[in-house]
Length: 458
Image (cartoon, rainbow, N blue to C red; front, side):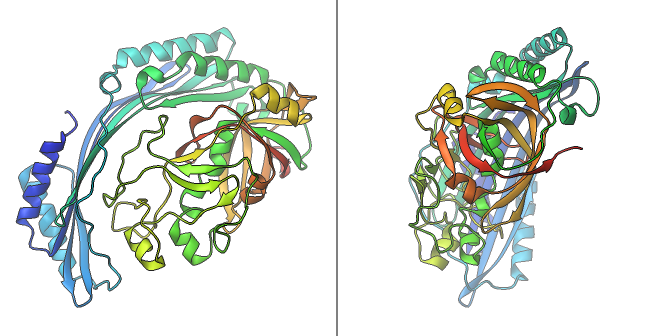
């Protein structure tokens, strides 16, 4: 199966619009080709070569000052299945309660097209097996068990509506992730465990050798950790640890719904200096490490959008409904509609600074180097108080020199306060993912007085 070309996708959508009896109709087509291999220390454990089409039809009937609305979907693009989805949506919409606050569908727009990467789309299982073989061979040389994931994905999305909106684009993603650990189920808590990953838009950009070296050397260094009590400490968070904290800002912090409901740290603070001057954050699907679609779930164009500039907060991201409700511009951050989640910033970029790793360590002086955080959850949304624990190697730093590993620690920390206590920003930002899902571009951050509350294991 090949991804749908723009003309083919529009042809299918136009046929649905022609058959619709609704006053407004929207057709969204999502196509995915996903090829992956999961592996453990004895070799591959799961593989799949998956292809999927999803077509969603949203219809609306005018009722007084509002719309009766419903949505139905089909996992097939054959004519009968597609028309059946349209029929179901129309039946359900006629009995739905009218929404007087619904905003009419948006009309024609100009959107930059994006295309998939052919080498990423064609990347074979043989090539993925070569990645895995190299990783397991290196792990074995250090007496480590290895496991992880090799994956390539390409996807396209098309949206057409009866108001004249017609947008189409495609994305690519490639990933290699490796976790190394000494034998035993408790390696992650007693030491001798580390993970690394490279996530890129194109398969030829994936740093397989770098992932293997980083994971293996960090796991070896993490053996026999020192037992240290918890207290506020200065830390250098590596990009993946930063991502674990920043992921929660996408909707809960920067979204218009939380802003309106008063649960966002932006509420009542737009225009104020919230964070350290070195912190600038944007939402940017055009960033070369992200290369997202140039339109949102409603087909509204989107590009680079400033969220925080030199520590000063801007307004929330919006979609058509929230922009209308709050009297703000539509920033192009809609989810696929209908949705109760509200808009979110899905392509976060934390701007890099001007300090090398060596300079960050020197400025840190005495403290901790933290590679990863996991089990991160929200305790209180207004200040984004988060709790979780370290993972994958925590190392004591003395006089700017990285030393012995220490045992994992739990933390409870306001992200607002943490970003206000940033005392250094790394000069290299990279695309990283958090263990709770979501990806962003981030550098390393030096944070003073990070609140560790207890040992992760007694």
